[in-house]
Image (cartoon, rainbow, N blue to C red; front, top):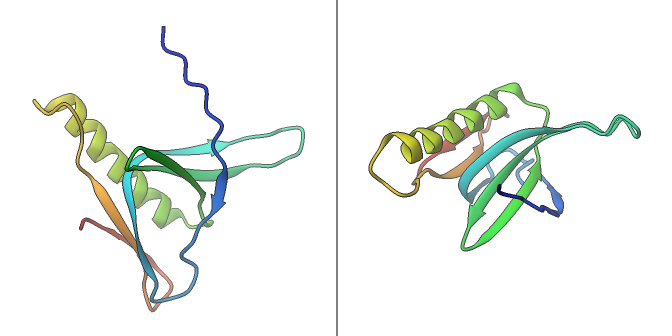
Amino acid sequence: MRIIDQRIKVKDFPLMERGEEAFFGYIVSVGLFVDWEDEDHFVYADFYYNGKYTRYNLPQDDDLVSQLQRRVFDNIRELHCTDHSGFSTKIWIERLPDGQWNTFLP
């Protein structure tokens, strides 16, 4: 049995201004946090790079969440369906001038 004991600080998503972009690392999960007692629900994404996990509270944007989910699936497919022992989808995220989001590979 594997036990994952996570205590990860959830950071605010850093890219809020149009025209900003940043490198985030390997996208490893997109999830939903639910706290019924405090009604604290939010969608998050976990990134891994240089031995460190970073969790961000995502903006309320279905397109960004969908793009990140596709990138996670790319890593899952690579991990399970190839001869590789890992995955390689590291991503940058940019906020476009029109306010939309774009995830891209370095």
